Length: 531
Image (cartoon, rainbow, N blue to C red; front, side, top):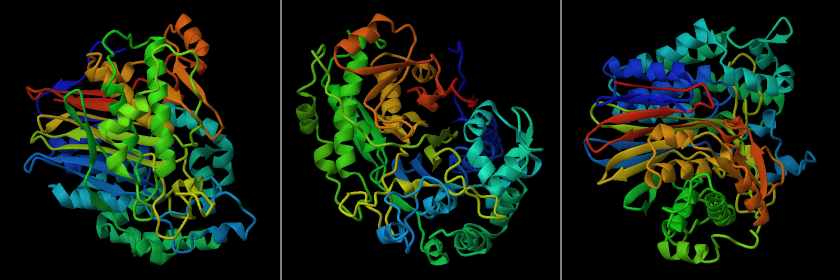
């Protein structure tokens, strides 16, 4: 664990890549707002963290506006194309949407429009200036980080299969090594076009044409009309209270409400005598996760296509009903399988001097998304739509214009109506679980935000697509506690003390005196900067 963490009374930025954090800090010091800085950080992450996020992906923003005292959410997730029907896949003999390739890129990327909306809402610097750091890193290059190189090694076969990806990540037939310069000239050109022409370049202009022409040649489904129809949506966050704090999340199609359900269940339990690394804690955590995921999987989809009964799911009475069957030391724990989710995500947060706060998260879904880059674009397309079901009766069944079940979930906690904690994490299925760890760490166990990020983590359920009821836990001397969990029926699997499978979390804590402290995850390449 770190002995110190960044702190200051004026501003704070944190992200999963130190270069992106530095970009956000520089934007703030140039007189930009948290709105400007969040867009600049997001764009920079799309360059220096290309295995996790980029122009071809989606983004969600939770924004506290200090002047009005209101919190708004921006849903920047894309919708399925007009030709994205179940029949379009089944007539090709497919019973599931492929996870990779052009046919997995079935939803319009929402990232760029989300940037534009956030910047227009509260940006102070010129649009081109906000994107300039990202463009420079794309054009001039940056050193391949430890995390990027690890994922390049894991996905080498996919990188070699796509001409655009192989031209970037391989040199002389070998993968670029950690510390070598990665230059992305086509991506730099795309960012330069965005600087000059704004968001329309991506949805009706030359960038859209390049992407859709590539998809047409390679058998994809998205067409120009799909891009032209895309708009982000400003939404009201969903919330609950936890031990006197208000916790906010994005509404569906985000899975954010699932962690609110978990908190509602835990609120009725006294954690004061339960050690954070004890069998009892992990047991309670796993059991509330199972119950929340059962309802999440039953209902979560685009609310414009199917009703999601949030009032019932988030009621304290319902939480008591769900938690009634949880025993502190049970004879056995009932397993529950949950659906597979990707892990390629980047969470970041910004607080500016005026008190504006932005909690945001973005993704390509799988690592390197669809592993497909339309020729000449420099843009990796997401495979988020591959999470749709091809079973027409499924709540998350594929349909034109529909947003899919989305794992992305930036979080914010308020005390007395103002932000006290911004938090989020990479990790797909693990996002609600790590968010639960962060909140309980701060609220129940008195941790600083860095200590909460550093706590040993768990992930219950599927990871990387395999059917599993495993309870994966980072082993920090768990020892006999793991044996007790197994005796209670949990399928425990221990991982290394700082294992990457647990994702990477970031956070900012804001004290009642205005002190901002920031945290970045030791499991990744992140940094926090404040002053």
